[in-house]
Each structure stands twice: as C-alpha cells, then as structure tokens.
Length: 325
Ligand SMILES: O=C(O)CCC(=O)C(=O)O
Ligand SMILES: [Fe+2]
Image (tube, rainbow, N blue to C red):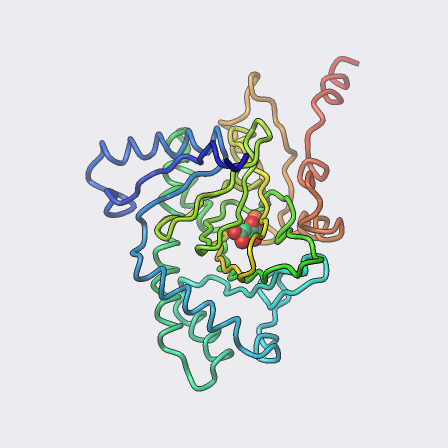
C-alpha cells in the first residue's frame, strides 16, 4: 500500500446547506462544528457536493481548451499583480497558470474571454461565471462558520469589504524521464483561504500536524478548502496552516484550479482583539499585506517556507525578556 494513503482529510458534505444563511439551524451548526474542527486540526478539509458534476466537467473542458491556445495568445493575459497574469517559470518547470481577478463579477470573465478568444467563447465564459459564483458562495459560507464558531461574526462584513479574489487556473505537464516530479514546491498559502479542485490525475499532497503527507483523494465532486496564513493571523494561531505541494505521477498533464481570497493590498492584517489574551499572547505583529508580499517575493516567493513568521512573528521570548528587564 502507498505509504501516503492511510489517513484521509476530513470530508464535509455541503449538500444539505441550501443557502449561506439557512433556516435549518441544526444542519448549519453541525457543519459549522465540523468545519472549525477540521481547520483547527488539519488546516483543511474536503468539501463535497457543492457544485454539480456537470459543471465540474464543463469547467475542466474549458481549462484544457484554454491551455491549448498558442503561447502568444496566453501571454496576452498580463498583470502587475502576482499570479493574475500568465505564469511560467524555470523554478517550477512543469507548472503554468493564468488568473482572473474577482471572477464573480461577470464583466471580468467577459474581458478575460475576449482576450483569449476575440471571436467569443460563450461556453467557456458561462461555465467559469457559474463556477465562480458557487466558489464565492462556498468561501463566504466557510468564513461565516469559522467566525461564528469563535463569536467573531461582527467582523465578517468588514473583512469581506477588504477581500479580493483570484481564480487561478493551472496546468502541470508530465515530467520528462530525467526531470523532477515536483509540480509545485512545499508551501503554505499566505492569503486568507484557498479553495482547490484537481482533476482525475491527482497529485495534491497536504502535510498533517504530525508531519505526515496525505495524498488528497481524487474526487470529481469535491474541493479542498485550505486555511491561509492571513486567516491564522486574524485568529492568533487558532488554525493549522498546512504545508502542501503537488507531486506528479504518470505521463499525463494535470489541470487544477484555485479560488484564492486575498486581503487587499495596503490593508492592515492584525489579530482580532478577542483572540489575544494571557493564554493566547499575540503571535504576529500587525502588518500591511501589500508590503509583506513585496518581502515575500524578494525572498523567492513560494519557496520561502516560513516567510510570515520571519516577517512579523512576535518573538515571545524576546518580548517577555524585555518586559522583565
Ligand atoms: O494545483 C494545486 O492543486 C495546488 C496549487 C496551490 O497550492 C497553489 O497555487 O497555492
Ligand atoms: Fe497553495
């Protein structure tokens, strides 16, 4: 048996939740408990049954069509914001990605589609729009559940106002026989939260608190929801933020998709006051997200494993010592 297969991420069924604010409190509260415990213990979970298999399939067809476009067409997708444009880098030779900012705004998907297909591609456009609406709904639902679990619901609206979104679509080609099988290096996500979906090739691996790697089971109908560093700063360390990576196997290309919620640049990230007390001393000093990203990319971006701790970690030993002296 594969040494990475015995443990599985918690699987949470979202099919009984009709809307983000359901009338059935019992279902809501039981899913909410599962979500919070999964984030606390694993930093992630599989959310099943949130979109239909038909929609998943049409989005995956759309991705293949997109990455099959000629390179010069893909390069038209440019942006000053990291990962919003076309990305291909010798640091991650198997990897290629493109991004659509705030994709639940229909005009943003329209202009991306026009850029790639000047004669139009209504099927691509409509399936990405429908998908983004669902992912946005899942994002809000999960955050509302985590905030409610800690009595922080009053912060939700304010935090949503200062959040931007990125739909990042990714292709990993199969490695040549002499190449490394690393699709994406071990990293944590520095943003608030990420919702991932991978196709049937698989390869996403998540590290547990006990440093064991779990190879995420492929499922056509589920997403992996991953807690990011920013979320953990707000909650002053109450979540686990998992290391993860992509390892390629076999000889077929892998397609995946990530819906990233990101604190807007030039907004302050700091722990909520209620999360800091004697038992939970402040772990991270308040910081500006845009400034942190500049530091992060200077350090080599995705390869710098403990970037946030290095940037703004509160060295408790030092501050305790300072208080004493
Ligand atoms: O492709 C994947 O499944 C993972 C991507 C990822 O972790 C990231 O872009 O941060
Ligand atoms: Fe990631």
